[in-house]
Image (cartoon, rainbow, N blue to C red; front, side, top):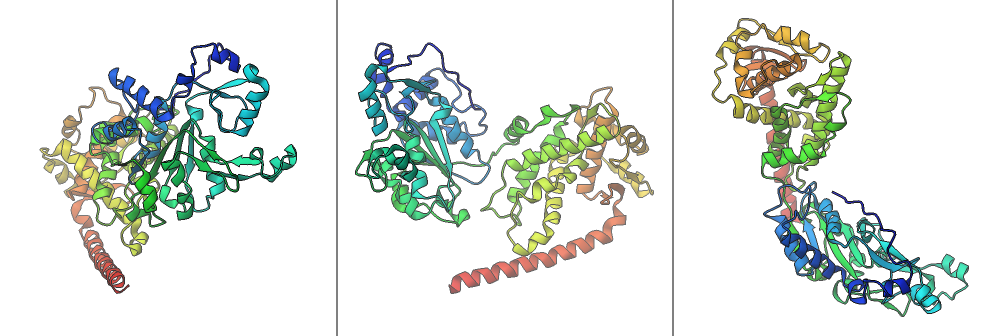
Length: 512
């Protein structure tokens, strides 16, 4: 999404050249918010995409951001993790001019026509039209700070710099001994603070002046810097972070509060994962069946609905991205191991991707953490079932079930090449005849056929028509009935424990 800009060599290099060019004082001194607004208007008139690469926000979040920019507002994006908040903020650089001039060597990127710092004022007074000019690209005009509890006012605003004073021989009271923080260094650009509630309250107070009066006061100096900055913030909803909150006067100074959300369309989710996952960098040719993509995305949708998963934490879009990458890696490893030229993911590869899921969900019940793998397996099984129903809802699988009921067993293992697994699967009567809804090519490779057949068997397992062991051996459903009853019993026990734990917590909160 980032655009790399180069600085043309013909641009003015001194203040004199600048004054004699098309870079007039009105053009150079236009505020950042006016610049963002003007360039946004031009994009809207040209019907250009405002935030390339951002999917699913076209009718919800993007119009609100457009309104905030047109209103010259500082704004905050509120949403759960993995909702593209940082990416949107960084995308604001596409609304900045390709280049802007500043006084060369200035730490706060002084406007050559209206300098703020003592350094720039003294340099222009000394060199006049010979004052050197440098140029800023949009990326250089974006400054981002991840808020953490240890951030100080000096980090954001600035402080006295004894080393600078010692080297220059200036008194500590001199403006030339200032160390500028990130905010002054973002002058004439965009300053973004991620996870704003994590800033200590007294640090948030330091932002009041820049939000209201447009200036900052650096500790101990009788000088105010009238900075030109567009301020943007991001935060998780306060009821989830619990690490801090945005102080009320600061919230009051933020022009627009914009809520982000998770994608509500499977197609959009598939598009994002396809855009972000690394499949194009695989060592082999990769063929990802459509049903694999759907199952991977359904995992996130199912997890967001699961009552055992903490809704306040959310389930990030990073989950399906990580899962897809692990799925591809396992398929790639299997193909390399057997000398196959194409890697085709299977449902079994999704189960190997569990490490990419367990770390990205938080469970509602603390005691359930020991059973995180059980929760994840249930989520995957439900995702497979939903996807299976989309293809095979009308399919009659009785012939396949009968084969297993008569004692048939088949095992799919990464230790066996696709050709070997295909021969095993071909024993199952009627199996490949049922794969028509997947629209496989006429001469599908063994890798593609095995993946499709396993998907059908996994879907039947999810519906408890047949059973599967952890060793990926598919058998008749009856052989697993006792085990399933035991699992159901343990799940009921855990459910009662979870309810007891929640009731005790509610009682404690009520008492406090």
